[in-house]
Length: 384
Image 1 (cartoon, helix red, strand yellow):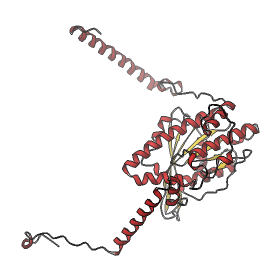
Image 2 (cartoon, one colour; image 1 turned 120 degrees about the vertical axis):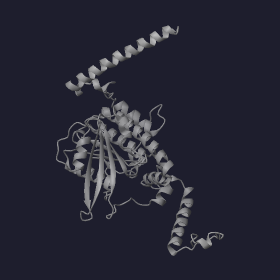
Image 3 (spheres, rainbow, N blue to C red; image 1 turned 90 degrees about the horizontal axis):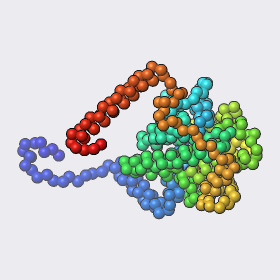
Image 4 (cartoon, rainbow, N blue to C red; image 1 turned 90 degrees about the vertical axis):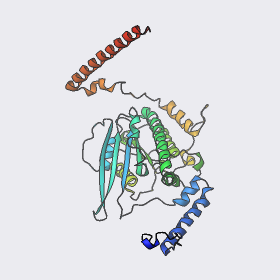
C-alpha cells in the first residue's frame, strides 16, 4: 500500500496483517526447537550440555576454506622452529627465533579450487617474552586458535618452570579474550567453551576435577631421541607428570624428535588436525618406555596413577609438582636485561652512535628543565 498518492495523503494508516510464507514458518519452528533444547540442557551441567550440543568432533568441510591460527611457544632451543618447518614441509635449516615471528602455510583442497590457510606464530626467548602472547591471541582469531607448548625432554630442570609459567599466562589471556567475546557475541563464546568440554564427554570420571583451558592446547615433549636414553624411573616421573598436567588442562600430549620420522609424521598429523580439521588417529600410547601420544579427553587420573603423598600438598596437581621439583630442581631461566637496547647481541654501530647522541641530548634537556623549575621555585619562594 502506497501513501504517496495525493488523494490518499490524509487517509488514516491502518495496520496491515503480515502474512508469512512457509520458509518463515520453518525458521520459527527451528528457532523454537533450538530454544527448547537449550532450556532442556541448561540444568544438566556444562559437560553434559556440551556433549548434547556438540556430540562429535568437527570434521573438515570439503566445500569451505579453513583459516586458522597456530601459536607455538616454549622453552629456548626446544625445537619450536623445527616443528613448524616439518609441519609446513619446508626443507630449511632452523634459525634462532627473535621475539615474535610469523609465517603461514596453505593446503589445497577440493581439486585445488579452495585453499586452507594456517597462520603460524612462534614466540622466541622462552618465558622471558611471554607478555607478547597477547599479540596472536585476540578476539578475532580465538575461535580458530590452537596453542602449542614445547618442552625440552632432555632438560627436565627447565620443564616445570616453562610449562607452569606459559600455561598460567595463556589461561589468563584466553579468559580475558573470551570475556570480551562474550560481551559482543555470547553465543560464539559459549560455543567455544562447550566444544572444549565436549572432548571429555559427560561420563568422564574426572570431569569435575579439571581446569580446562577453552582453546585447544597441545604439549609437545621435544628431543625424544635424547630422552629415550634416560633412567627408566626418571622417564616415568617426567611422562606421568606431563600426562597429568595435560589431562588437567584439557591438552593433547605427544613426544617429538626431528631425527625420528615416525614421531615427525605423528606430530604433523596432530597439528594438521588442529589447523586444517583433518581426520585424526585416536590410537594412544601411555607406556612411559615409548613415545607418549595422548589426545585430550582420552586419559584418566586412574590410568596415570597418583604421586606419593606429600605433606602440605593441597591438590593432585600440587603433589605432582612437588614430586617433580624434588626429583628435578628447576633452573631459573635467564631473563632479558632491563634495557634490551644495551644487550651486546644486538650491536649496530651506526644506530648505536645515533642512539648515544640522542641520549646525550635527552640528558641535557632534562637538566635544563630541572634548572628552569628550580629558578621558578626560587622566584615564587618555594624550595625544591
